[in-house]
Image 1 (cartoon, rainbow, N blue to C red):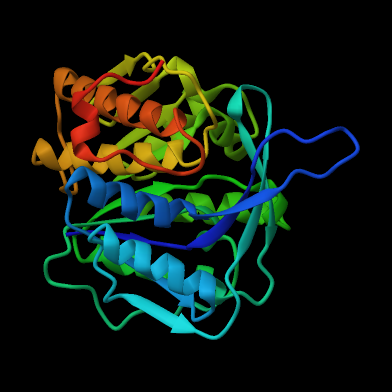
Image 2: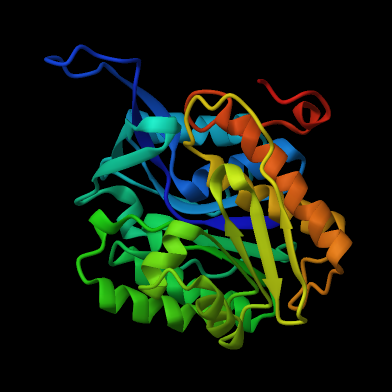
Length: 313
């Protein structure tokens, strides 16, 4: 089982273009980086569980129903009467999305450290708002340290949302404290530059690898993905071409596809020592899965069967 720990929320996505003097109509869509990752894992065929706190409001009920419908284990989901976090999406040129969050006093912020994880757990993934918003962030951090100490493969995608981070320097220090407990660090070039406070990502990746992760995977949008490992492997693959509707959920799909394909190679271990050809296969699989998500509106990760057909152009 692969566990995904973090927030679930509702994305409010523009229904279409609006006139200059009007606000766009907004459609509610299930979302949140960890939530999307759990759904994507299950759709790809990996046994997945979601570890979070969901509201008992109608949005929370919809989030829970969808997890169950896709076969995600929800035994680690906590419930509470607090409202569901809302993220208002703005779709820019090229389909890129930025967000405004309404997260004060919401359910996912009150996540508590679970007593334990299922014996079947072999890997756990963390990221996004759940590692920012206290007091829940502290519980997720402790879960990360505990899981790593128990030998689980740990994946981290910071998925930076600057508007949610009140003290950038303090967050960067916390990020560095997570690295000794991380097996694979995945992040976009933009997030890497923000964390490193530099566009010299080669030096930053080298420093991060020296701090603990076995591998660092950088996503470069349509240009593809690159991995560097402690063993000196460095592999890049191009992106898979598609007609982009929006990029919502693309990075989360990459998270799931990496974990799914690493598992295919028997690499969900503390030192997933793959050779260059195996990493190339993993990255290419992730690029194809992400392209399918980008080809449709909102976070709609692909099912395994869709990866066998052509990517929409």
